[in-house]
Image (cartoon, rainbow, N blue to C red; front, side, top):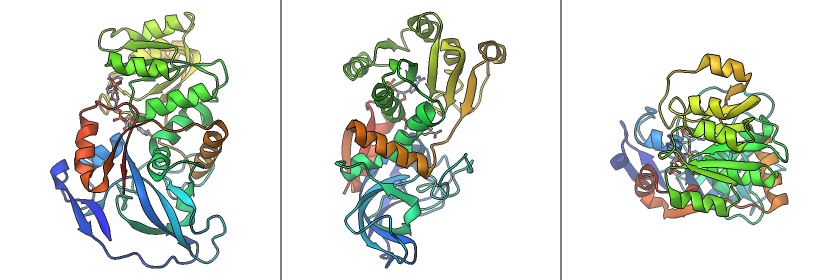
Length: 335
Ligand SMILES: NC(=O)c1ccc[n+]([C@@H]2O[C@H](COP(=O)([O-])OP(=O)(O)OC[C@H]3O[C@@H](n4cnc5c(N)ncnc54)[C@H](OP(=O)(O)O)[C@@H]3O)[C@@H](O)[C@H]2O)c1
């Protein structure tokens, strides 16, 4: 069985194809899944570059989807032939967050899905949205569910709300689709005029180039009637937070999810206090939230935006493409 693994200490030239033993038959409560699709996240890129100090030989990718081949005793939720998609936290089933690290995250603390077959607990997967292919399904595990939790599960998004999104990567474009699905109004930033045009075609109401307009926080607040936006999906981190605080309305919600500009920095505490905004750190979501998300995607016939698909053996090339930041939405791999 083929797997794409990372040799320590990491680096894109340290991603190699390896042969692993077949995982065998599923035990009680387990399923055997023939994987066919995965997707790339900034987190996977950090692992591949060696920043997460993953174990030598780690199988890459947090997101995986494929077809159930066989089910172990006691499994009633899935049957052979079902398309299933992995969960980011295989042990967090429901309720408030219980995990604050990546020790059990596939493709980081444990082997991921850049391989042909896995045997895992059935509870580490959900059903994929009907009509999706495996690569499309894989995009919901990390980017999709994070956007869903930020806006819906924790954000309480309502029709008519205003949402500010930063950049046009995987999380932000999923967030754009979710916001539109709920009848919210969307402001989105990008470094590229061409990407902003695409976002506009997808229903973004207001677009802005963050390189040309570094004071985008105030401009986004003005766009939201001078009152400020209800929600910000903060993927930037320390380099963008001050502008996000500027943009949010009094009593609004900022989901702090990203590290695109670094891992620590200044927080404008007085401005945040004056805004009485909820600044919430979050990492992806629970299996129950993923099930809710799948249901919503099916009911609204929404499909992910995949910029480009790579073959599994070209995984290193796919990461180089992500590093170039030329993509809009998700980058997928399939096999
Ligand atoms: N906490 C969580 O659960 C969670 C889950 C998923 C992702 N994340 C984090 O969220 C961030 C985005 O992840 P992703 O997978 O969506 O990444 P991605 O697909 O690689 O997105 C990269 C895009 O981010 C935009 N960007 C970069 N610097 C920016 C800046 N200073 N201001 C605004 N936009 C900027 C760029 O968009 P343009 O090309 O349009 O400029 C770039 O193309 C990462 O930091 C990732 O670690 C966190």
